[in-house]
Image (tube, rainbow, N blue to C red; front, top):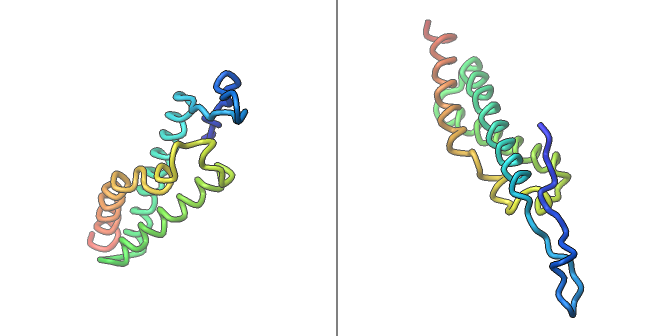
Length: 121
């Protein structure tokens, strides 16, 4: 899973007075980076749900475990982007929040499934 630099400097976008390069996002790289976030969060949600079910987490403990997994995932994505979010994504919210609720549904599904298999049957 490669994170691609989604910005390009525009030499034609220079204003006459200040001479700064404008940052332009490359749409394909930005979409690829968003897919990487979505897939990694979904995978971690499924694995985290299975682990939470096997370990027997119930109630609020399971949701705290999910928040911990998502925090670790966000830190991992930040580290992968070398803490330079502006070069790979259009906002910080992309790394911190995208895929959070979709992953929550997968987490709860696999959490209850694994808990039922291990502790009930």
